[in-house]
Length: 471
Image 1 (spheres, rainbow, N blue to C red):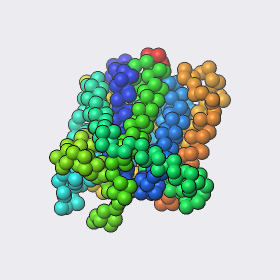
Image 2 (cartoon, rainbow, N blue to C red):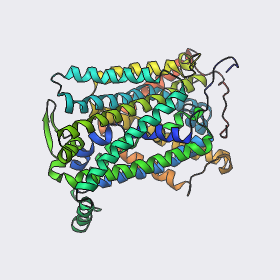
Image 3 (tube, rainbow, N blue to C red):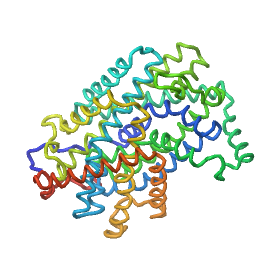
Image 4 (cartoon, one colour):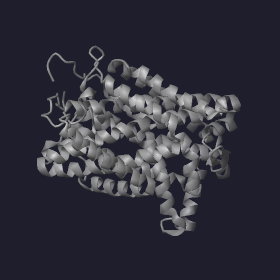
C-alpha cells in the first residue's frame, strides 16, 4: 500500500469492541427462537440448548482469540486461514472463505432484517407479504446509510445501541423476577433429570438438542466480530480476546436469565404453543411481547416490541460493519477481486465492500424466509471458517511454536479439539439440504478461484500492512 493511500485507523477501544460484539450477538434471534427451542426440547429442558451454545462459543472464542491477537488486521478468518495453512493451500482456503462471505454475510444481514419485519407484524399486522418484505429491504438500506461514515463515529453509535440492547433484556428479566416463579424452570429441569434420565439416548434427546442448538448457536454468533475489525482495534493483543470473552459471558447470562424469566411467568403450554400462519403452523415468534403484555398490558407489549426491533436493527448494523472489512482485506492481500481493495478517500472505510454486501443482502431480504436463512448461515460457515481455521491454528502452532502467539488458550489443544468435534455435530444437525448446499458453494468457489488465477485477477505478491499486535 503506498503512503498516499488512506489506511485503517485504530480508533475502537475495548468498550467499543465489546459493544460491537454484543449488539451483533443479540439480534432478533433470541427473541424469535425462544418458543421454538422450548418446543423442540420438550419444554423444561430448553435451557440445555442455550448452555450448549454458550459452551461452544467459549471454546471457539479461544481459537479466535489466539489467532486474532496474533494477526490483528481487517478480515478476520481470511488472515487466519492464509497464515495458518500458508502457501497455495492458504490462498485457496482464504479465497473460499471470502467467496462464502459474499453469500453468507448477506444472509446474516438479511436474517436480522427479515426477523425485524417479521416481528414488526406484532404492531402493524401486515395483510400483504410484500409489505413485510419492503420493510426488511428498507432496514438494510438504512443500515448502509448509517455505516457510510468514519469508524470513530460508528463506535459511538454502537455504544448507544448497546445500551438499548441491554436495557431491553434487563426489562424482560426484571419482569420475571418481580412477577414470576423465578426458580420454577430450573426445578422442572432437575425433576426431569431424576425421572427421565435425559442423558440416555431415550426419546431422541440428543437429536432434539442438536436441532435446538442450531438455533441457539445462531443467537450467539457475532462474538468474533471484533476480529473482522482487527485493523481498527486499539491494543488488539489484549482487547480482542477480552472483548470476546466479556461478550460471551455477558450474553450467556442474559440469555439464560431471559429464558428463565419468560418461562417463570408463561406456562410451558403457552411458551411452546404453535400458531397458524400463511406458511402453516409455527411456534409463537412474539412470545417475549406476549410475556410483557401478560405482565403490564397491551401498551407495554407494543413498547417492548419497538425495543426488540431496535435490537434487531442494531444486529444488522454491527454485522454489516464487520463483514464489510473482509473482501477489502482479501483484495488488499491480492487474494480476491481487486475491485474491493479500495478505501473511501476521505472517510477511510471499505465503501465498495459495504455497498456490494449490502446490495446482495437487500435482495436476500426480499427472497428468503428466516428459518431457511438461519440453517444456511450455520452450515455455510462450519467447514471452512470454524473447523478450517481451528485446524489451521494447529498447523500454525506446530510451525511457529507457542512463543509466537501473544495470547494462548489454556489447556491447548483440548478446547480446540472439542470445538472441532462439536462443530461437526452441529453441521450434521443442520440437515441434508443445508450440508449439500454448503458443499456446492465450496465447489463453485474452487472453480471461481482457478478462473480468477487464470485471468490473473489474484495471485500476485500481497501488499504489506501494519500488523503489530501492540499498535
